[in-house]
Length: 281
Ligand code: NDP
Image 1 (cartoon, protein in one colour):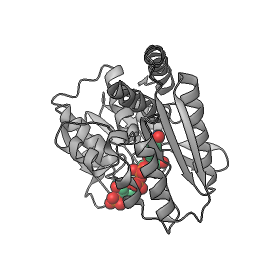
Image 2 (cartoon, protein in one colour; image 1 turned 90 degrees about the vertical axis):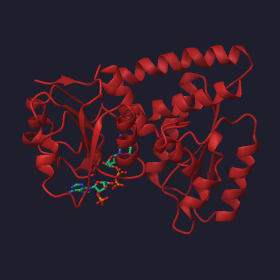
Image 3 (spheres, helix red, strand yellow; image 1 turned 45 degrees about the vertical axis):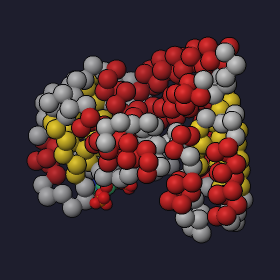
Image 4 (cartoon, helix red, strand yellow; image 1 turned 180 degrees about the horizontal axis):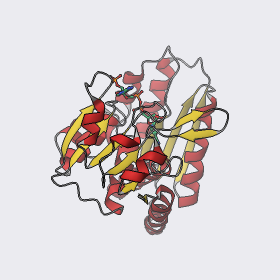
């Protein structure tokens, strides 16, 4: 049976360290600050935003919330971002996605100062990741890398298969694995013979958004499996993108859903905000 990679425990350990470092910085007169901008009433976004604020408070990071009506104009939102770019109390700016249809998401993300882009979505930060000199790395993939590191997985020379090529998970995690000297294959909806690709992997990272589509029988004996997927099945049950019960028979280590990658995402947001405040200091 596989080792279960405990995301909750890794996140708790990191948050403890972040809290200590934040206290040290505060004692030097610098309080890390995160601005969280929410446009509209999307219930899931509201939950994420309140989780992020609570996490900040638990670690001693100052957070400032901006709740804007769903019909807020793009111009008003861009104005607010410019104001936050210039606000010396703010080290990180997070605009909760998705935005209402009438707002151009790329324009908004590109208005955030790259030096406060704690989500790592600004093209400047994407470019720095591509060129191997990252400033801010996007939170979910960065969390995946921390988990692999904490589990003692050395990616050097390993075959990593990433299933999914989104800008927020698949592509950045593939780049991070490449930077860690893995040989990386990126798969997507047009990939031919996905089972064979996955079967060749020493490390499988699934970020697909389809419940249990990566079958346990595809996993090579002794592989490490990171399941980024979070899919609601029925009223209450959450499952990942990997068929967990079958995959854990073959894997050496595997992340559960929930309790795997999920807790790492907000942790890395705190981490990036603290790093930004350290640069300010
Ligand atoms: P996207 O929908 O943006 O991307 C999904 C990717 O999976 C696409 O590249 C798509 O390919 C590929 N894909 C879809 N179906 C198949 C298939 N049958 N075979 C192979 N590839 C396929 O999703 P995200 O990257 O945003 O999210 C992925 C998952 O991760 C979701 O479950 C999401 O909820 C979860 N997630 C979890 C987070 C966390 O904090 N734990 C944070 C962010 C996401 P193509 O490009 O060809 O369409």
